[in-house]
Image (tube, rainbow, N blue to C red; front, side):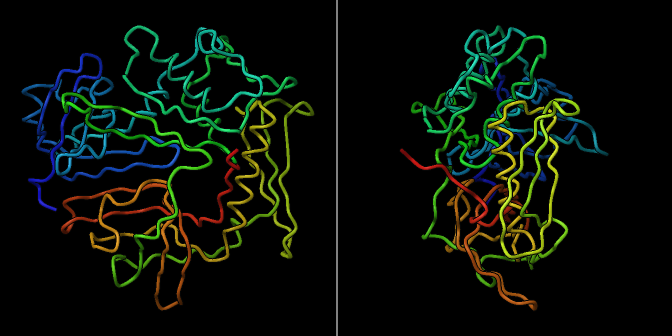
Length: 368
């Protein structure tokens, strides 16, 4: 991957003014994740920054990566600090902004409370509330996706209480946690006129991504490390007890359990901020399904080189890709889901690090 194919741009988050159209960074790494903001790290010469500190002013500067004319990553700079003779930059994509916003008006400014509500709608309401307040409009658009999942019941209404000042980012995390829940990922692209960018939250139901038969990951073709074959009983459990809000006998709790012919192993999941019974049950189900895949042999992370078998940029967060790993301990083959990817474009001609989970560990809702 040639440097001439890639540039890093910065922009003022509120005014939209371009600050740099080719920021000369080094040690660049960036990527997205499932149900999270992803990350970007890089280093910059302090001498350049000292000439104009606004180029990467943390908390109000958008930063983008463009490859071959297409925007492939976008987010907000959150940290910039000296490390020896360089300045280290850390950024995260759009959903990280909600970790710095709170509902101090209550019920998302009158959009709630919620009973049998589509969590996709609640996510859109969350962003609408955050961006309706002065100096809070980041210009993020949220997909119009709808789901058949629901949050809140007549007996257990989903409230956003002003006196609790709930963190909007934490609340969105609750909405996408658990089995049969919508999923999200951040993305960015040029607008049709290529004069500005579209900052987007992609919503997926019953899932994000797709089962990919056009690409594959395999030892000897594009996997360049020796991934660890994860086998361990410490993390395995087919019984998960989830604990929510409350104290003593009033603490909300639920159990997700199956009998699978193995010795009973239990795990306690402590979620002190979850006050919805349906959300608590969903989180317990997700944890139990995931823990049942542990100990049976999984591949958690691989490092790839750019090949025709899976060209960089050909996959998305959430995709299932057939993976074959061969080493001295045997062979792992199976469908794995991409939950996080990071691209290091200038590392030995380009490397990508992908976090994987067994596709079977995910349960998706039914499309109605």
